[in-house]
Amino acid sequence: MKPIRVLVVEDSIVFRELLVQNLGRDSSLQIVATAKDPFEARDAIVKYKPDVMTLDVELPRMNGIDFLRKLIPQYPLPVVVISSLSDKVFDALNAGAVDFVAKPAVSNRMQLEEFIRSELMVKIKIASTVKISKIKKTVMMQQKQHLSLKSTNKIVAIGASTGGTEAIFSVVKEFGTDIPGVVATQHMPPGFTSMYAKRLNDQCRIQVKEAQTGDRVLPGHMLLAPGGDKHMRLVKVNGVYQVECKPGPKVNGHCPSVEVLFESVAKSAGADAVGIILTGMGGDGAKGLLAMRNAGAKTIGQDESTCVVYGMPKVAYDLGAVQYQEKLDDIAGRTYALLNKM
Image (cartoon, rainbow, N blue to C red; front, top):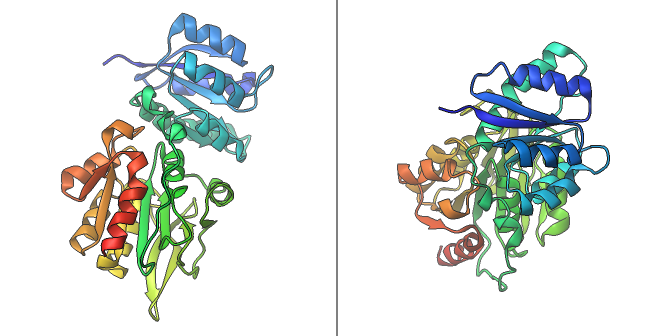
């Protein structure tokens, strides 16, 4: 198998050399070029035709977000953004980046090298599998006709990974204030989930917040699992749906895990739930969605044609967990239709 050709775009010479040295130790990766700003990067893309580009958001001469907006339409390329703790990363994802990693706030060389090996390498390999033509689809969605519900005494559970920030937004922006309580897990580093929740809250009709233990799951509201070392579970206390966010080991390589959330929804809500599995690498959430379906819940999976990475929905579909496979822009409508029949 040919190695993945990588272009590294980073203005710090020290961090750039660290990236090159450590990424180059993996025989499946080949660093074909480096660049310190978007203008050098553009020339390198034309000359070397890399498979994946890593991109710092803060760059001289032009910031990474403006570069992405100019780049993707002309030179479709999977991009992994390296970002400090900032909501600019969501602008980068909206502009066409496939995924991001959080740059650790440390100067310790060993910790930086571990970050590169354990996080960045994985993201690069995932990005190399993405069909770039799918990346901007979620940004181009048309506004749906108004949807409405007869009842809100249900639960909607959503899980996603790579490509999921834009996919979740595309679904949730169609939800009205009549939607039942929504619980969602998106694989994301700590700190970024609170910013993502605020972003959704500002842009959608429903209210969105990062979840905390004891938060009630209310109609017209969405609770997002916090990134870090906690899993979010749905529980029912005195007939009222709440969430618990408690530390635990990684499940399917993730914390928070979609699997953990979906299994808790199957246990606590049973047939009074709709489960939605969206774009993402791997199989996290597939067995949990099957547990939901076996408990009587309705289940939806994003179809291959609109997934940035057709991993999690495919595994769920192959297991028989998905009742309805839908294009991304049809998922909200299907959710309302199912809820109205429940």
